[in-house]
Length: 494
Image (cartoon, rainbow, N blue to C red; front, side):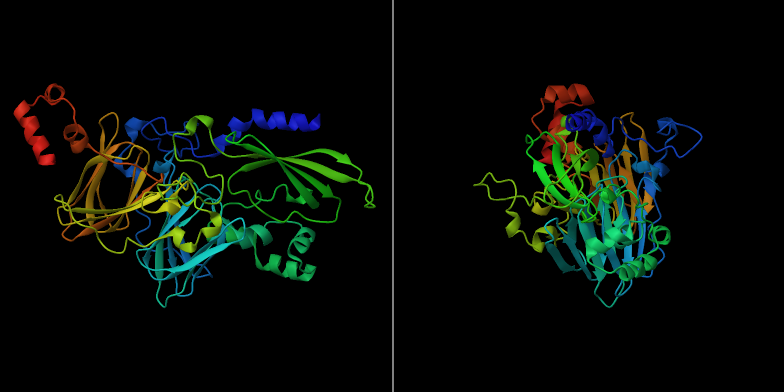
C-alpha cells in the first residue's frame, strides 16, 4: 500500500517537478525584476532598453584562485536580460598550470571554446570512461549535461576559454567541495572511499565549504546528497517502465549500519526518495532492513517534444550513415574526437556583404546531438554586415571577440534595441526575433554566437520574403512595389 501511495504521489507531481527546467518563453523577453520589494517577475517591457540586453563584465579576466583559475560567470543572477532565454556563459582564464577542478553543471550542457592557449580538457561518463585531449586555440569541446569534467592549462602561457550553457543558471558542483566540504558524515565517507578516519578529517579540514563557495563562486552544495545518509549496503532493483513516459523507478534494500550508497548524482533526472517500510532479513543476523523506493523523473514536459530532445543517456553521437536508422553511435565506439570540433581557428569565405560565417551545429559536429547547444564564428570586413535574420529554435548570445559593431534586434512590437558594442561585450538576442550586425570599426571584426539548440535554424528575411516562390501579386500588395521592382529584387537575390 505504501509503495502504491509513493508511486501515485510521484506521478501526480511529475509535471510540477519538470518546472525545474528553464521556463519556455511566452513573450519576446522577460527582464528579471531585481526589485525585492515587488513580486513582479518581469520588468515592464515599456521600460526595457538596449542596456538590459548587454553585459560588459568580461572584457578582462577576474581574480585568480589558488588553483590558477579566474572565472567570470554571466548568468541570470548578474545579467537579468537572460531570464527565460535559456542560456548563459562564462569567461575562464588560466595561469600556466592553472586548473579547473573536476565539477559538473546539473542543469546544462557546456560548450567550451578555446580563445588562447593549450587546455587539457576531459569528461567522465557514468560508466567511468574518460574522454580527454589537449585543445588548442580555435577548438571546441562539448561537456554533456551533468557529467564530471575538468580543464588544465598545459601550455607555458596564460590561456582563455569561453564556456556557453543551455540554461540561464546552469549551476556548478565542485567535486572536492561537494564531497568533503559540506558536512557529509565522516563515517559514510570512510566507507565510500576506503580511507581511515584521520585521512577523511584531514581532507574535510582542508576543504572549507563556505570559503570555497565564496572564492569559487559555486552554489550551495548541501542538497546534492540529501538522501545519502539514509542508505546502507544497498541492493537496487530497477523496475521496467514504458519507454517515453519520462519516469523510472528503483527499489533499494538496505542493510542496517553496514554499507554505503556512495555519493553520486543523476545527470538526467530529479530523484524523490521515500522510505516505505521495514522488514526482517533471515540468515544475516540483522534485526531489520530498510526498504526504500526511488522515483526518478526526467525533466521534460510531454508537450515540449518539439524542442531539442532531453538526453536520456550520457551522450548520443549522431550517426551520419544514411543507410542506417540507428540514431546514436555505439557507446563502445565513441572516442574523445567525437566531442571535439577543430574548425574555428580561421575565417571562412567572405560573402558579398563582407561576412564570413562558420557554423558549428549537429549537422557538422555529431557530438552535439541531444546536448541542446551550438555556436558560430562570424568575421566581418570593415563595413561588413549580417542581413536581418532570425533563429526560430534558439536564443543567441553574441560575444564580441574583436572589433566594434552596431548590433540590435526588433521585438514583436516593432521596437528596436540597438547599440554599438565593443570587444568583450555580450548582447543577447531572444529566440525568434529579427536581428542584425554591422562592423562599424576600422579593423576586421569577429563575433562568437552561442545558441541553446543543437540546430537553431536561420531565416534570412530578404531571401524568405523575395527569394521563395511567393506570388508576386501578394508581394506587390504587401510592400506597395511594382511587379518590376519585385522582379528586380528577386534577380539580385538569385
